Length: 291
Image (tube, rainbow, N blue to C red; front, side, top):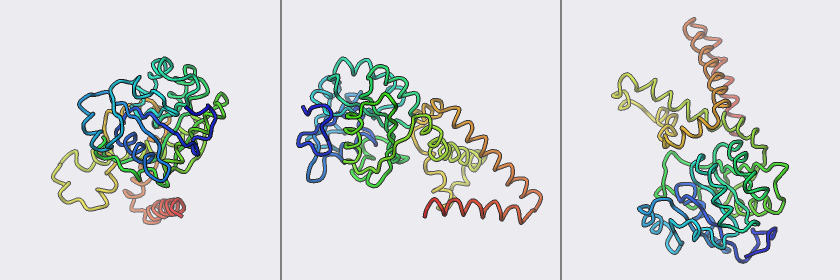
């Protein structure tokens, strides 16, 4: 096993143990195993019935329901399970891996996860959130290019070990990600607006559009489909995300309601100038983001 602190992005022998081979975990395994310097990957899944599908998607990749077997000899452990399961994984991991093994995750909310795992795992835990995904879930939706060019936000703290941070940077970079580092709380505030709020808005839009008459869906064009696609994501996962980041999401929803009220008032008054200004500002902000 490489010495802790070795540059794992250049190591000749690199192994990642990925816990949770769904869309994110499965795609990460595929990404790391490709190229001229592929990583060795082992996978852990909670349910035995999911093993055949994972083995079919990742031929030659060890898949087990035995956590000890999955993490044995790993240079990096990656938690791609639900946010609550990530928070509760620390004690079990400490009994199974070397005290020097870096650990990271792919959870969408960082403050609770870092607060839960850092006291148990110490500075070798580095929170991460790859900003990539799909409304689909499970290993069937995994693909090797999911992270290509995607931003991965790392959330080190003052307690983070520099060598562990370098190792985690190397692994996410090897998967194809661009990297950015933020404090956990700053991450949760920003991501609430650009990831969590859009999902909440898409779900609310579906309710408003189809709640009274589902047959309207047959009239919908690409605008409705594109705007609401993410509302098809798994509700159990998104419920955990919303509740774990409740204050930041609630603040975003309040701001969204304020903007909706302003638009509604302008429309009811027939105020063409106010409606045009509302739409123009939104277009300009979106265009700047796309530049």
